Length: 493
Image 1: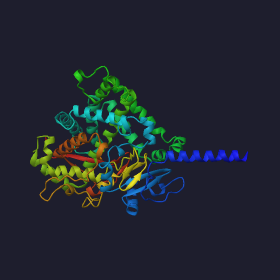
Image 2: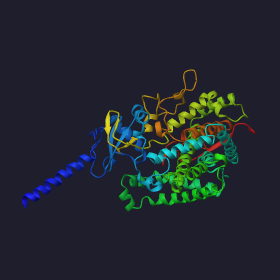
Image 3: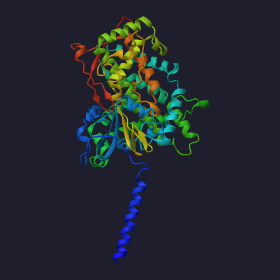
Image 4: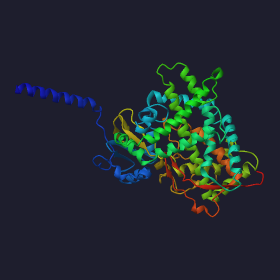
Protein backbone atom coordinates (compact mmCIF):
# COMPACT_ATOMS: atom_id res chain seq x y z
CA UNK A 1 0.00 0.00 0.00
CA UNK A 2 2.78 2.39 0.95
CA UNK A 3 4.65 1.98 -2.40
CA UNK A 4 1.39 2.59 -4.28
CA UNK A 5 0.71 5.73 -2.25
CA UNK A 6 4.27 6.94 -2.83
CA UNK A 7 3.89 6.25 -6.54
CA UNK A 8 0.66 8.23 -6.72
CA UNK A 9 2.22 11.11 -4.82
CA UNK A 10 5.16 11.02 -7.20
CA UNK A 11 2.86 11.16 -10.23
CA UNK A 12 0.93 14.04 -8.69
CA UNK A 13 4.19 15.87 -8.03
CA UNK A 14 5.34 15.33 -11.61
CA UNK A 15 1.96 16.52 -12.93
CA UNK A 16 2.24 19.65 -10.78
CA UNK A 17 5.71 20.39 -12.14
CA UNK A 18 4.50 19.93 -15.71
CA UNK A 19 1.59 22.31 -15.11
CA UNK A 20 3.93 24.86 -13.57
CA UNK A 21 6.30 24.74 -16.52
CA UNK A 22 3.36 24.92 -18.94
CA UNK A 23 2.23 28.15 -17.32
CA UNK A 24 5.71 29.62 -17.11
CA UNK A 25 6.70 31.99 -19.93
CA UNK A 26 9.32 30.71 -22.34
CA UNK A 27 11.72 33.21 -20.82
CA UNK A 28 11.87 34.09 -17.15
CA UNK A 29 10.43 37.57 -16.62
CA UNK A 30 12.68 40.37 -15.45
CA UNK A 31 10.68 42.94 -13.53
CA UNK A 32 11.68 46.55 -12.92
CA UNK A 33 12.46 47.54 -9.32
CA UNK A 34 9.78 48.95 -7.09
CA UNK A 35 8.54 49.36 -3.53
CA UNK A 36 7.95 46.25 -1.43
CA UNK A 37 4.22 45.40 -1.39
CA UNK A 38 2.25 44.94 1.80
CA UNK A 39 -0.13 41.99 2.20
CA UNK A 40 -3.53 42.48 0.56
CA UNK A 41 -3.08 46.19 -0.32
CA UNK A 42 0.22 45.99 -2.19
CA UNK A 43 1.51 49.58 -2.60
CA UNK A 44 -1.84 51.35 -2.32
CA UNK A 45 -0.66 53.12 0.83
CA UNK A 46 1.90 55.01 -1.28
CA UNK A 47 -0.63 56.41 -3.78
CA UNK A 48 -2.79 59.50 -3.34
CA UNK A 49 -6.21 58.77 -4.80
CA UNK A 50 -6.80 62.26 -6.24
CA UNK A 51 -3.25 62.67 -7.57
CA UNK A 52 -2.15 59.19 -8.54
CA UNK A 53 0.11 60.48 -11.32
CA UNK A 54 1.99 62.74 -8.89
CA UNK A 55 2.48 59.75 -6.57
CA UNK A 56 3.95 57.77 -9.48
CA UNK A 57 6.34 60.61 -10.32
CA UNK A 58 7.53 60.70 -6.71
CA UNK A 59 8.16 56.94 -6.80
CA UNK A 60 10.13 57.41 -10.04
CA UNK A 61 12.60 59.63 -8.17
CA UNK A 62 13.38 56.69 -5.90
CA UNK A 63 13.15 53.71 -8.26
CA UNK A 64 13.93 55.20 -11.67
CA UNK A 65 11.77 55.97 -14.73
CA UNK A 66 10.55 52.36 -15.04
CA UNK A 67 9.26 50.64 -11.90
CA UNK A 68 6.82 48.04 -10.63
CA UNK A 69 3.93 48.72 -8.27
CA UNK A 70 1.30 46.42 -6.79
CA UNK A 71 -2.33 47.55 -6.72
CA UNK A 72 -3.68 44.97 -4.34
CA UNK A 73 -2.60 41.66 -5.88
CA UNK A 74 -2.16 43.14 -9.38
CA UNK A 75 1.42 43.73 -10.53
CA UNK A 76 1.77 46.75 -12.82
CA UNK A 77 4.67 48.50 -14.54
CA UNK A 78 4.78 52.31 -14.65
CA UNK A 79 6.78 54.27 -17.26
CA UNK A 80 7.74 57.88 -16.58
CA UNK A 81 9.59 60.54 -18.57
CA UNK A 82 9.80 61.12 -22.30
CA UNK A 83 12.40 58.45 -23.18
CA UNK A 84 10.69 55.51 -21.46
CA UNK A 85 7.17 56.47 -22.56
CA UNK A 86 8.23 57.07 -26.16
CA UNK A 87 9.98 53.68 -26.32
CA UNK A 88 6.78 52.01 -25.11
CA UNK A 89 4.32 53.88 -27.32
CA UNK A 90 6.34 54.23 -30.51
CA UNK A 91 9.06 51.60 -30.19
CA UNK A 92 6.67 48.67 -29.80
CA UNK A 93 4.20 47.40 -32.40
CA UNK A 94 1.26 45.24 -31.43
CA UNK A 95 3.00 44.07 -28.25
CA UNK A 96 1.67 47.01 -26.25
CA UNK A 97 -1.47 47.93 -28.20
CA UNK A 98 -3.95 46.15 -25.92
CA UNK A 99 -5.81 47.34 -22.84
CA UNK A 100 -5.85 45.44 -19.56
CA UNK A 101 -9.33 44.46 -18.33
CA UNK A 102 -10.55 47.37 -16.17
CA UNK A 103 -13.43 46.20 -14.01
CA UNK A 104 -15.83 49.13 -14.42
CA UNK A 105 -15.34 49.34 -18.21
CA UNK A 106 -15.74 45.59 -18.55
CA UNK A 107 -19.16 45.99 -16.95
CA UNK A 108 -20.04 49.03 -19.07
CA UNK A 109 -18.77 47.83 -22.43
CA UNK A 110 -18.18 44.09 -22.07
CA UNK A 111 -14.92 44.33 -24.00
CA UNK A 112 -16.52 46.23 -26.89
CA UNK A 113 -16.24 49.76 -28.21
CA UNK A 114 -13.02 51.56 -29.17
CA UNK A 115 -11.16 52.82 -26.15
CA UNK A 116 -11.14 49.82 -23.80
CA UNK A 117 -11.22 46.96 -26.30
CA UNK A 118 -8.28 44.96 -27.65
CA UNK A 119 -7.40 42.63 -30.51
CA UNK A 120 -9.49 42.23 -33.68
CA UNK A 121 -12.50 43.97 -32.17
CA UNK A 122 -10.45 47.08 -31.39
CA UNK A 123 -8.70 47.11 -34.76
CA UNK A 124 -11.98 46.83 -36.67
CA UNK A 125 -13.67 49.56 -34.62
CA UNK A 126 -10.70 51.91 -34.87
CA UNK A 127 -10.29 51.45 -38.62
CA UNK A 128 -13.97 52.13 -39.22
CA UNK A 129 -13.88 55.19 -36.96
CA UNK A 130 -10.87 56.68 -38.73
CA UNK A 131 -12.48 56.12 -42.15
CA UNK A 132 -15.81 57.56 -41.03
CA UNK A 133 -14.30 60.73 -39.52
CA UNK A 134 -12.24 61.30 -42.65
CA UNK A 135 -15.26 60.87 -44.93
CA UNK A 136 -17.21 63.34 -42.77
CA UNK A 137 -14.55 66.00 -43.40
CA UNK A 138 -12.59 66.01 -40.14
CA UNK A 139 -9.50 68.20 -40.47
CA UNK A 140 -10.88 69.80 -43.63
CA UNK A 141 -13.34 72.47 -44.73
CA UNK A 142 -16.60 70.53 -44.14
CA UNK A 143 -15.99 70.17 -40.42
CA UNK A 144 -14.35 73.60 -40.13
CA UNK A 145 -17.63 75.07 -41.41
CA UNK A 146 -19.54 73.16 -38.72
CA UNK A 147 -17.17 74.49 -36.06
CA UNK A 148 -17.63 78.09 -37.21
CA UNK A 149 -21.40 77.63 -37.26
CA UNK A 150 -21.24 76.37 -33.68
CA UNK A 151 -18.96 79.27 -32.74
CA UNK A 152 -21.71 81.68 -33.84
CA UNK A 153 -24.21 79.83 -31.64
CA UNK A 154 -21.83 79.92 -28.69
CA UNK A 155 -21.12 83.64 -29.05
CA UNK A 156 -24.88 84.21 -29.19
CA UNK A 157 -25.16 82.56 -25.79
CA UNK A 158 -22.27 84.57 -24.37
CA UNK A 159 -23.68 87.82 -25.76
CA UNK A 160 -26.89 87.16 -23.85
CA UNK A 161 -24.95 87.59 -20.60
CA UNK A 162 -24.01 91.16 -21.57
CA UNK A 163 -20.54 90.87 -20.06
CA UNK A 164 -21.89 89.51 -16.78
CA UNK A 165 -20.47 86.28 -15.25
CA UNK A 166 -21.30 83.07 -17.10
CA UNK A 167 -20.60 79.49 -15.93
CA UNK A 168 -17.33 78.16 -17.31
CA UNK A 169 -19.07 74.89 -18.24
CA UNK A 170 -21.09 76.75 -20.90
CA UNK A 171 -18.01 76.76 -23.14
CA UNK A 172 -18.24 72.98 -23.34
CA UNK A 173 -21.56 73.14 -25.18
CA UNK A 174 -20.00 74.04 -28.53
CA UNK A 175 -17.41 71.23 -28.86
CA UNK A 176 -20.01 68.76 -27.55
CA UNK A 177 -22.53 69.83 -30.19
CA UNK A 178 -19.93 69.63 -32.97
CA UNK A 179 -19.23 66.04 -31.96
CA UNK A 180 -22.94 65.22 -31.78
CA UNK A 181 -23.46 66.62 -35.29
CA UNK A 182 -20.79 64.22 -36.59
CA UNK A 183 -22.04 61.25 -34.59
CA UNK A 184 -25.79 61.68 -35.11
CA UNK A 185 -26.04 63.75 -38.29
CA UNK A 186 -27.70 66.70 -36.55
CA UNK A 187 -26.80 69.54 -34.24
CA UNK A 188 -29.01 70.30 -31.26
CA UNK A 189 -30.46 73.52 -29.97
CA UNK A 190 -28.81 74.23 -26.63
CA UNK A 191 -32.25 73.96 -24.98
CA UNK A 192 -33.11 70.62 -26.63
CA UNK A 193 -34.05 68.10 -23.88
CA UNK A 194 -31.90 65.37 -25.49
CA UNK A 195 -28.87 67.68 -25.61
CA UNK A 196 -29.39 68.85 -22.03
CA UNK A 197 -29.91 65.29 -20.78
CA UNK A 198 -26.87 63.89 -22.60
CA UNK A 199 -24.53 66.59 -21.31
CA UNK A 200 -25.87 66.26 -17.77
CA UNK A 201 -25.52 62.48 -17.72
CA UNK A 202 -22.03 62.56 -19.28
CA UNK A 203 -20.96 65.06 -16.64
CA UNK A 204 -22.27 62.87 -13.82
CA UNK A 205 -20.64 59.72 -15.21
CA UNK A 206 -17.27 61.42 -15.64
CA UNK A 207 -17.34 62.66 -12.06
CA UNK A 208 -18.31 59.22 -10.75
CA UNK A 209 -15.52 57.52 -12.71
CA UNK A 210 -12.96 59.62 -10.84
CA UNK A 211 -14.26 58.84 -7.35
CA UNK A 212 -12.32 56.72 -4.82
CA UNK A 213 -15.18 54.19 -4.75
CA UNK A 214 -14.77 53.38 -8.46
CA UNK A 215 -10.99 53.23 -8.12
CA UNK A 216 -11.48 50.75 -5.28
CA UNK A 217 -13.91 48.77 -7.46
CA UNK A 218 -11.30 48.57 -10.26
CA UNK A 219 -8.57 47.41 -7.88
CA UNK A 220 -10.71 44.94 -5.95
CA UNK A 221 -13.82 44.09 -8.02
CA UNK A 222 -15.17 41.43 -5.67
CA UNK A 223 -15.17 43.86 -2.72
CA UNK A 224 -16.57 46.64 -4.90
CA UNK A 225 -19.36 44.35 -6.10
CA UNK A 226 -20.12 43.33 -2.52
CA UNK A 227 -20.41 47.01 -1.54
CA UNK A 228 -22.32 47.86 -4.75
CA UNK A 229 -19.83 50.62 -5.56
CA UNK A 230 -20.46 50.33 -9.28
CA UNK A 231 -24.22 50.74 -9.20
CA UNK A 232 -24.43 54.58 -9.44
CA UNK A 233 -22.26 54.60 -12.57
CA UNK A 234 -24.16 51.77 -14.24
CA UNK A 235 -27.51 53.46 -13.59
CA UNK A 236 -26.30 56.63 -15.34
CA UNK A 237 -24.74 54.66 -18.19
CA UNK A 238 -28.03 52.88 -18.84
CA UNK A 239 -29.74 56.26 -19.19
CA UNK A 240 -27.09 57.39 -21.68
CA UNK A 241 -27.42 54.10 -23.56
CA UNK A 242 -31.20 54.56 -23.81
CA UNK A 243 -30.75 58.01 -25.37
CA UNK A 244 -28.18 56.65 -27.82
CA UNK A 245 -30.50 53.78 -28.75
CA UNK A 246 -33.25 56.30 -29.57
CA UNK A 247 -30.88 58.30 -31.78
CA UNK A 248 -29.68 55.10 -33.44
CA UNK A 249 -33.23 54.02 -34.28
CA UNK A 250 -33.92 57.45 -35.76
CA UNK A 251 -31.07 56.93 -38.26
CA UNK A 252 -32.07 53.43 -39.39
CA UNK A 253 -34.89 54.47 -41.77
CA UNK A 254 -32.44 56.74 -43.64
CA UNK A 255 -29.68 54.49 -45.01
CA UNK A 256 -26.76 56.36 -46.62
CA UNK A 257 -27.22 56.81 -50.36
CA UNK A 258 -24.56 55.55 -52.79
CA UNK A 259 -22.27 54.55 -49.95
CA UNK A 260 -21.92 58.09 -48.59
CA UNK A 261 -22.48 58.46 -44.89
CA UNK A 262 -23.87 61.55 -43.21
CA UNK A 263 -22.93 60.55 -39.65
CA UNK A 264 -20.83 58.17 -37.61
CA UNK A 265 -23.97 56.21 -36.78
CA UNK A 266 -24.60 55.76 -40.51
CA UNK A 267 -21.13 54.26 -40.91
CA UNK A 268 -21.72 51.81 -38.06
CA UNK A 269 -25.14 50.81 -39.38
CA UNK A 270 -23.78 50.35 -42.90
CA UNK A 271 -20.91 48.19 -41.63
CA UNK A 272 -23.29 46.04 -39.59
CA UNK A 273 -25.50 45.47 -42.62
CA UNK A 274 -22.56 44.39 -44.79
CA UNK A 275 -20.23 41.44 -44.46
CA UNK A 276 -19.58 40.99 -40.76
CA UNK A 277 -19.14 37.23 -40.18
CA UNK A 278 -17.63 37.68 -36.72
CA UNK A 279 -20.34 40.05 -35.55
CA UNK A 280 -17.88 42.86 -34.81
CA UNK A 281 -20.56 45.43 -35.62
CA UNK A 282 -23.57 43.77 -34.09
CA UNK A 283 -26.06 45.98 -32.25
CA UNK A 284 -24.28 45.86 -28.88
CA UNK A 285 -20.95 46.95 -30.34
CA UNK A 286 -22.55 49.71 -32.43
CA UNK A 287 -23.92 51.18 -29.22
CA UNK A 288 -20.62 50.55 -27.40
CA UNK A 289 -18.61 52.42 -30.07
CA UNK A 290 -21.04 55.34 -30.03
CA UNK A 291 -20.97 55.43 -26.23
CA UNK A 292 -17.17 55.61 -26.27
CA UNK A 293 -17.16 58.46 -28.79
CA UNK A 294 -19.82 60.37 -26.87
CA UNK A 295 -18.18 59.99 -23.47
CA UNK A 296 -14.52 60.51 -24.34
CA UNK A 297 -14.98 63.01 -27.18
CA UNK A 298 -17.31 65.25 -25.21
CA UNK A 299 -15.31 65.36 -22.01
CA UNK A 300 -11.81 65.95 -23.35
CA UNK A 301 -12.33 68.77 -25.85
CA UNK A 302 -14.91 70.55 -23.71
CA UNK A 303 -12.62 70.49 -20.66
CA UNK A 304 -9.63 71.71 -22.69
CA UNK A 305 -11.56 74.73 -24.05
CA UNK A 306 -12.69 75.58 -20.52
CA UNK A 307 -9.09 75.36 -19.31
CA UNK A 308 -7.96 77.63 -22.16
CA UNK A 309 -10.50 80.31 -21.20
CA UNK A 310 -9.62 80.05 -17.50
CA UNK A 311 -5.87 80.33 -18.15
CA UNK A 312 -6.38 83.36 -20.41
CA UNK A 313 -8.30 85.04 -17.59
CA UNK A 314 -5.54 84.03 -15.20
CA UNK A 315 -2.79 85.40 -17.50
CA UNK A 316 -4.12 88.65 -19.04
CA UNK A 317 -0.76 89.56 -20.62
CA UNK A 318 -0.77 86.28 -22.58
CA UNK A 319 -4.38 86.90 -23.61
CA UNK A 320 -3.44 90.40 -24.78
CA UNK A 321 -0.62 89.11 -26.99
CA UNK A 322 -2.94 86.52 -28.56
CA UNK A 323 -5.49 89.24 -29.33
CA UNK A 324 -2.85 91.55 -30.83
CA UNK A 325 -1.80 88.75 -33.18
CA UNK A 326 -5.41 87.90 -34.08
CA UNK A 327 -6.17 91.56 -34.83
CA UNK A 328 -3.07 91.87 -37.00
CA UNK A 329 -3.69 88.69 -39.03
CA UNK A 330 -7.48 88.37 -39.09
CA UNK A 331 -8.73 91.86 -38.40
CA UNK A 332 -11.98 92.48 -36.50
CA UNK A 333 -14.43 90.79 -38.88
CA UNK A 334 -12.97 87.75 -40.60
CA UNK A 335 -13.46 84.47 -38.69
CA UNK A 336 -10.42 82.22 -38.29
CA UNK A 337 -9.70 79.41 -40.77
CA UNK A 338 -7.65 76.27 -40.25
CA UNK A 339 -4.94 77.52 -42.61
CA UNK A 340 -4.46 80.59 -40.36
CA UNK A 341 -2.54 78.49 -37.84
CA UNK A 342 0.70 79.05 -39.76
CA UNK A 343 0.21 82.81 -39.58
CA UNK A 344 -0.66 82.76 -35.86
CA UNK A 345 2.42 81.28 -34.18
CA UNK A 346 1.80 82.83 -30.76
CA UNK A 347 -1.86 81.79 -30.69
CA UNK A 348 -0.83 78.28 -31.74
CA UNK A 349 1.88 78.19 -29.06
CA UNK A 350 -0.56 79.28 -26.35
CA UNK A 351 -3.07 76.59 -27.29
CA UNK A 352 -0.35 73.92 -27.26
CA UNK A 353 0.89 75.17 -23.90
CA UNK A 354 -2.62 74.95 -22.45
CA UNK A 355 -2.78 71.28 -23.43
CA UNK A 356 0.70 70.58 -22.04
CA UNK A 357 0.19 72.44 -18.79
CA UNK A 358 -3.18 70.93 -17.80
CA UNK A 359 -2.15 67.26 -18.33
CA UNK A 360 -5.83 66.54 -18.92
CA UNK A 361 -5.58 62.73 -19.10
CA UNK A 362 -2.53 61.72 -17.05
CA UNK A 363 -2.44 58.13 -18.27
CA UNK A 364 -4.30 55.34 -20.03
CA UNK A 365 -3.11 51.79 -19.25
CA UNK A 366 -1.81 49.36 -21.86
CA UNK A 367 -1.27 45.62 -21.66
CA UNK A 368 1.42 43.35 -23.07
CA UNK A 369 -0.02 41.04 -25.75
CA UNK A 370 2.94 38.68 -25.49
CA UNK A 371 6.19 38.39 -23.50
CA UNK A 372 7.65 41.84 -24.20
CA UNK A 373 11.07 43.42 -23.85
CA UNK A 374 10.68 46.99 -22.66
CA UNK A 375 13.35 49.40 -21.42
CA UNK A 376 15.71 46.53 -20.66
CA UNK A 377 13.15 44.43 -18.79
CA UNK A 378 11.20 41.34 -19.85
CA UNK A 379 7.50 41.58 -19.01
CA UNK A 380 5.25 38.51 -19.26
CA UNK A 381 2.13 38.46 -21.38
CA UNK A 382 -0.83 40.18 -19.74
CA UNK A 383 1.20 42.71 -17.74
CA UNK A 384 -0.60 46.05 -17.26
CA UNK A 385 1.70 48.91 -18.29
CA UNK A 386 1.02 52.58 -17.50
CA UNK A 387 2.79 55.10 -19.79
CA UNK A 388 2.46 58.22 -17.63
CA UNK A 389 1.70 60.98 -20.15
CA UNK A 390 1.69 63.67 -17.47
CA UNK A 391 5.32 62.82 -16.65
CA UNK A 392 6.21 63.50 -20.30
CA UNK A 393 4.37 66.80 -20.39
CA UNK A 394 6.14 67.82 -17.16
CA UNK A 395 9.54 66.23 -17.91
CA UNK A 396 12.30 68.54 -16.67
CA UNK A 397 14.68 67.21 -19.34
CA UNK A 398 12.27 68.29 -22.11
CA UNK A 399 10.72 71.55 -20.90
CA UNK A 400 12.48 74.65 -19.63
CA UNK A 401 9.85 75.52 -16.99
CA UNK A 402 7.59 72.46 -16.80
CA UNK A 403 5.53 73.56 -13.80
CA UNK A 404 4.84 77.04 -15.19
CA UNK A 405 2.40 78.17 -17.85
CA UNK A 406 4.86 79.32 -20.49
CA UNK A 407 3.90 79.61 -24.20
CA UNK A 408 7.61 80.13 -24.90
CA UNK A 409 7.96 76.34 -24.76
CA UNK A 410 6.60 76.32 -28.32
CA UNK A 411 8.34 79.42 -29.72
CA UNK A 412 11.75 79.82 -31.34
CA UNK A 413 13.92 82.89 -30.74
CA UNK A 414 12.48 84.50 -33.88
CA UNK A 415 8.88 83.98 -32.70
CA UNK A 416 8.10 81.06 -35.02
CA UNK A 417 6.09 78.14 -33.72
CA UNK A 418 8.19 75.09 -32.77
CA UNK A 419 6.94 71.52 -32.56
CA UNK A 420 8.15 69.61 -29.50
CA UNK A 421 8.64 65.84 -29.54
CA UNK A 422 7.53 65.58 -25.91
CA UNK A 423 4.13 67.14 -26.66
CA UNK A 424 2.01 64.00 -26.26
CA UNK A 425 -1.41 64.99 -24.85
CA UNK A 426 -3.08 62.66 -27.38
CA UNK A 427 -0.67 59.79 -26.63
CA UNK A 428 1.29 58.26 -29.54
CA UNK A 429 1.78 55.09 -31.53
CA UNK A 430 -0.94 52.65 -32.51
CA UNK A 431 -3.40 53.86 -29.88
CA UNK A 432 -2.97 57.57 -30.45
CA UNK A 433 -6.29 59.36 -29.85
CA UNK A 434 -8.64 58.57 -32.73
CA UNK A 435 -10.18 62.06 -32.47
CA UNK A 436 -6.91 64.03 -32.41
CA UNK A 437 -7.47 65.76 -35.75
CA UNK A 438 -11.02 66.75 -34.80
CA UNK A 439 -9.93 68.05 -31.40
CA UNK A 440 -7.12 70.14 -32.90
CA UNK A 441 -9.45 71.73 -35.45
CA UNK A 442 -12.16 72.48 -32.89
CA UNK A 443 -9.82 73.92 -30.30
CA UNK A 444 -8.00 76.24 -32.69
CA UNK A 445 -11.12 77.68 -34.36
CA UNK A 446 -13.12 78.04 -31.13
CA UNK A 447 -10.23 79.46 -29.11
CA UNK A 448 -9.21 81.96 -31.80
CA UNK A 449 -12.84 82.94 -32.44
CA UNK A 450 -13.56 83.57 -28.76
CA UNK A 451 -10.47 85.69 -28.13
CA UNK A 452 -11.04 87.62 -31.35
CA UNK A 453 -14.44 88.69 -30.03
CA UNK A 454 -14.12 88.88 -26.22
CA UNK A 455 -11.87 89.82 -23.34
CA UNK A 456 -12.11 86.99 -20.82
CA UNK A 457 -12.04 88.38 -17.30
CA UNK A 458 -12.59 87.27 -13.69
CA UNK A 459 -15.99 88.14 -12.20
CA UNK A 460 -16.28 91.59 -10.52
CA UNK A 461 -14.45 91.68 -7.23
CA UNK A 462 -11.92 89.02 -8.20
CA UNK A 463 -8.43 89.48 -9.60
CA UNK A 464 -6.70 87.14 -12.07
CA UNK A 465 -4.48 85.88 -9.25
CA UNK A 466 -7.51 84.68 -7.24
CA UNK A 467 -8.89 82.44 -9.99
CA UNK A 468 -8.72 78.80 -8.94
CA UNK A 469 -6.69 76.58 -11.30
CA UNK A 470 -6.49 73.52 -9.03
CA UNK A 471 -7.70 70.56 -11.13
CA UNK A 472 -10.86 68.76 -10.10
CA UNK A 473 -10.33 65.01 -10.41
CA UNK A 474 -12.88 63.23 -12.54
CA UNK A 475 -12.18 60.86 -15.42
CA UNK A 476 -10.01 63.75 -16.62
CA UNK A 477 -8.35 66.59 -14.71
CA UNK A 478 -11.10 69.16 -15.11
CA UNK A 479 -10.94 72.87 -14.30
CA UNK A 480 -12.80 73.74 -11.10
CA UNK A 481 -16.35 75.01 -11.56
CA UNK A 482 -16.45 78.80 -11.53
CA UNK A 483 -17.61 81.81 -13.54
CA UNK A 484 -15.89 84.17 -15.98
CA UNK A 485 -16.94 87.28 -17.87
CA UNK A 486 -16.85 87.55 -21.68
CA UNK A 487 -16.69 91.28 -22.43
CA UNK A 488 -17.05 92.23 -26.13
CA UNK A 489 -13.84 93.83 -27.38
CA UNK A 490 -15.48 96.08 -29.98
CA UNK A 491 -18.99 97.48 -30.12
CA UNK A 492 -20.95 95.49 -32.70
CA UNK A 493 -18.06 93.04 -33.28
